[in-house]
Image (cartoon, one colour):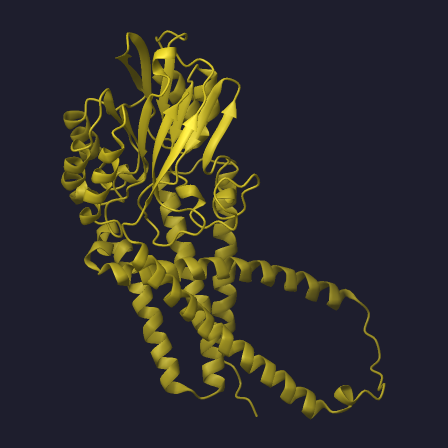
Length: 448
């Protein structure tokens, strides 16, 4: 006879699923702009969403291990769950720097594990809700008298019970092994992908482009995320590759750092080595501001004349004036709490300039496209999306499907609005160690 399952397992599972459902509803509300929420609060919600599925998964597997009296596996599994959760507790009590003390392979494993469980936990919530509705409907139906139809499977309850237990055991073994195997394979891929990127060449035609700017080249570098996974040692190949392109201008569209301000000096040194003929222009991304907003902004304004924050400057190319505008980071298009939003920032950045002047605008978030285009920007360069990071469809697919399509209207590549064009790059670095159908890249854009 199968031992009775402890009620605490079921209670913990229901509590975890309920918590996941609640966090998902809040995040959905934020995505739809139904209510304001501070940026640090979003990080906290994601942290909760990363932790709860581990409790659910541990409880689910532990029920099976208790039933099978597999005590040594049970304790090994419990220790493993504690070890994967300990960095999350470190982030909670010591801040994001707690991650940086760990070796990159360990960081990669833990990040992949939690992202995988977040995905599985979200699917489990959907299944839980669907099953709950079906069970409610079944209970609402009037009971029917049992009938013996002579079917052997129905006539032999012992045989039916053994078959059910066999299927359940197979399911539990798969549920136990599959996440570990997927995490192991993805971790190997993530370790091998560290610091790797491709060079992409993109030609963009612009109706208002002055003749003297035809063939003008821009090297766009975005989302370097120097820190946990993309280490300072990976900066030299980026600088060398960008300088070999020998572009007229360099555009860095945010997320230079992953989060730790201690990596800023090495990153600034690498940026200073990027060669250009007409300017190196930079805007801030959300990750740049996570650790020390004040220190980051002070360092950039002191060292980089081309750092733009809701403002524009002008350069001369072949006797023609070109306006370069840059937006400070905003997550939302409309004002939220103390954030004026992308629309207001676009208006501020282009205020006071000649609307007839050819304009290139830099923004981290691509959702500033409409506002910048409406205020006269001819070319908008953005990052932030990582090309969708994990996509089922290849880059440039007409109807992209994947992680990015849940968050962004513009995921990767070129988009048009009247006479304006947006280009979104997948970025060269990583905050998450695995990409699928979204390769890391440095882009050289040629204007025609």
